[in-house]
Image (cartoon, rainbow, N blue to C red; front, side, top):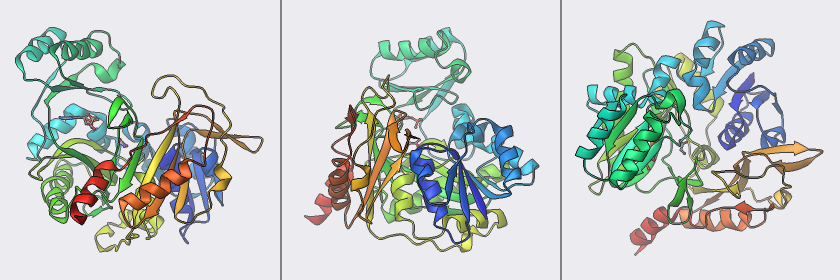
Length: 431
Ligand code: AMP
Ligand code: GLY
């Protein structure tokens, strides 16, 4: 069977790599892919933009693709799965109506309330003067969110009235996020530790994947501007077996039942971004209708089961009987990015040292890279993610950084502290 992976980042390199290991898969096509996918065996990049749904359907038909797995959210929110289904093709990802869980914060907040799923209190506004009045009346800090997709840039945690007012004006007055910011959601600030809870869903059954945590800000100590993610690890020690059970009972099961009861069958990866408070109670910060980036890289590096088989099972509604095996070791990934990211940065720089990585416990998943005359060049903000396995998160961290140090280009940046929260927990439980 041929498989198509839609997208071109680190998540898609990991998906293509893992799907390529399945005995069911003869060839992996990646649209558009990157230098990392191009260099995988039996894997070919096809230069189609993930948002060009017509060309993707045409490709899947002409190549007799048996399974398509979608990485990013935009094509899902735009209805790629609806289009593929109409053409009789299997596309792993929710239809547009269910992808609203990521596409509209307002849809999600009211959905969570309707189904009694724990989340921060909120109010929503489309009129500037009403939003500005409201901002004056609520406690600080408060969280201001553009309703639609804003590539992770549409959330402001305002510490002062001034910041809150500026964020509201930026969205409702200056239209900084265009259509995505015509409605703002203002919510209560939650305290605690964040974790990612990602599952595969077949409409009814929920198959939870290994837990993970990412680091969203660019600089050490979780400081600096927000990014797409500077590193991640799995498992996340904050998700104890007890909290795992609470998340299933209070979040995942009611969410999938709630969607079904509203006529929205959900198939695909479902990602709950959670805040776990000091008492261990989980609350939903957001849902994503896809796998996380960079969480995919460490999670799939630990997955021993056949991902293609699991995706296919979701079309028969038999995910509940599936056994999933994990490497018992922890995996930790460090993102190397271009100097200036998440702002402006240079592209086209020579990446050196990739050939120095040959340990079976290490894998470099590429993101913003391109091949030119056999040489791998930078082609984006997040360039790659070096993932390593270790008996503890600490050991995985040491091995990941040993390998990061072998790779270089002019102006490469990375955080030095990926995994510190998990490592602190390991220290406490060891003492
Ligand atoms: P979101 O895209 O909604 O997950 O928000 C992006 C980031 O903003 C999250 O990963 C959190 O770090 C932070 N955030 C969002 N909502 C809240 C909240 N209600 N309380 C505290 N932090 C939040
Ligand atoms: N790592 C966060 C995300 O994929 O949205």
